[in-house]
Image (cartoon, rainbow, N blue to C red; front, side, top):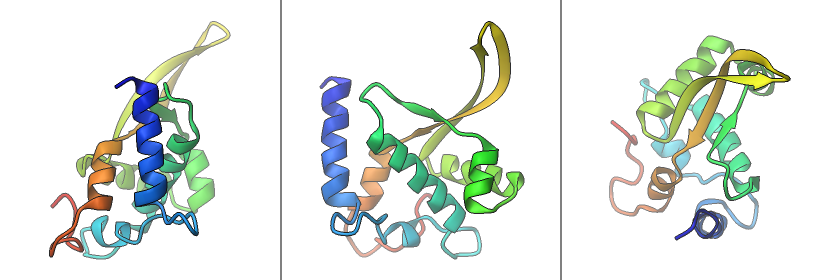
Length: 141
């Protein structure tokens, strides 16, 4: 399967299975599967994951990761950089995303410390489509 075919498959699968196709909302199962250490839904992690999914569904077939600034996320969600960092680490620990820091070059000038996040689409698809009695249990524990 080519990257383009893979993306087309997952995009159609997400639109029909994961996203509430009538409303365009994130799936309710996320509020049961993505929970914090205090056994409450992890709203910040869910918001970040939702942002990445939106970028993924709108991207071209060759896009794997997205450069996202903490300032952008902080402005959108009204959380501190530390809270954002911790939420991203929690998502990474649950194998829902991968993160990496990189130096990029702009007009011949190296600019460091850019954050790139990659959505693990297969893992996300799995938690959104699984069935059974443990469907509401914490994911990744």
